[in-house]
Amino acid sequence: MNVNKSFFQYVIPSMLAFALSGIYSIADGFFVGNALGDNALAAVNMAFPLTAFLQAAGTGIGMGGAIEYSIHIGNGDTHSAKQYFGMSVVLLCLSSVLLTILFLAGAPTVLGLFGASGEIYKLGREYLLYISFGAVFQIMGTGLVPLIRNMGSAVISMLAMITGFVTNIALDYLFVWVIPWGMMGAAIATVIGQGMTFLVCLVFFIIKKEKPALDFGDAKLSLAKRILSIGLSPFGLTFSPNITLILVNRSASLVGGDLAVTCYAPVSYISSVIMLLMQGVSDGCQPLISLSYGEGKVQRTTAIRNLAYRFGLAVALVCMAVLFLLRGHAAALFGASEHIVESVAMILPVFICGYLFVSISRVSTAYFYATGKNLWAYILIYGEPLALFLMLCFLPSLAGGIRGTWIAVPLSQLVAMILSILLIIHARKQDPQSA
Image 1 (cartoon, helix red, strand yellow):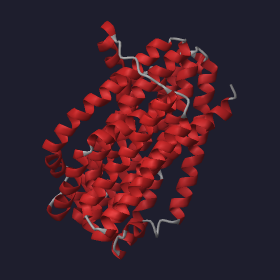
Image 2 (cartoon, one colour):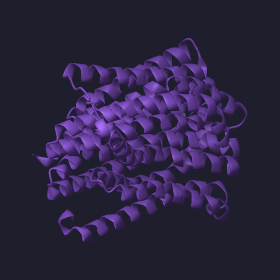
Image 3 (cartoon, one colour):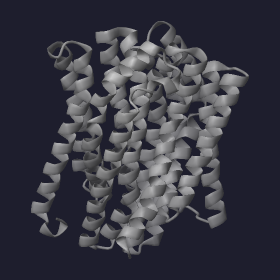
């Protein structure tokens, strides 16, 4: 196998797919911000972590099953691979029902806990109501994509995401600007877009005759436990930018009020796409890492990881340069007022610094969960938001208010990168062949 060729055949489609999933939130923010103003822009920003939770749940379950699928294919155990495929589908269906009920009952309360109030809360609650009705499509659409990618069809998984993205953009324009339905229209557009992604995935399985094995026997609990234990890492990796969003929004609301929350909205939209590009690199190389690991080819596994480090760094540097040059125009894309545009131009460079750190920590995390080192992956994924939370407890008061809130984000990402390097060094000492 040509490592470089296979790497880019998986990683490029994965990057595009993840980037497009991030643009879902930007698309909603763009249309409602230009149609309804700064409060609507801030409302989508504060509500999006709940939408992202649904997508992260689907990604976690799908990735958990997909990783085990690849490892067992590498081992030559096709039946077990299909069982993991089947159990993933069952878990995706069950979680869809459960989360729909929970979101309809509790999403408005959680939105208030995030710091939303007044008009921002009212608009955010309306948005979340219709997102909740379509939770099944959010979960199933994002959950089946990793399985398709690990079955060797990275391009199809990308096309599924592109189909949903194009649908979402077209319907955002129709439902927000033309009809107009406002926040309700943006939410419905997002749900239908994810529904189209799910439909493409379904058609793929039918045409390719990829049937999940549903004869679990006595292994059903062990299969589910294994998928969920592995899936906790990609779930956290997908959702961690939104934990950052929640914590920073809360801190910004307390320290700087609604104006600071609105300033952070364009920054978070931009950062979410960059973070997902980084995840596209890490999750794109995951099928190759898992397959090589399952085949017992340690040196090839390490070569793929190291190539992902180099490529991830290159992508981060390009994004940093482009955003720094365009920092004065970034917020204007979302219809923000002139004051918000100027404020975002000042604070965006602070967040740009963290992209370099993320490129290292994301690849390390994916390497760990792709090779079964779940505990180390958990430490990296959940250590970063924990570091951010601790920094937000004291940095705003030490650094003169809202500036401390902004600085805490790249500092927490630096902590995660240092920790990932230390864990890689530890892994090298345990197994010198994996260096």
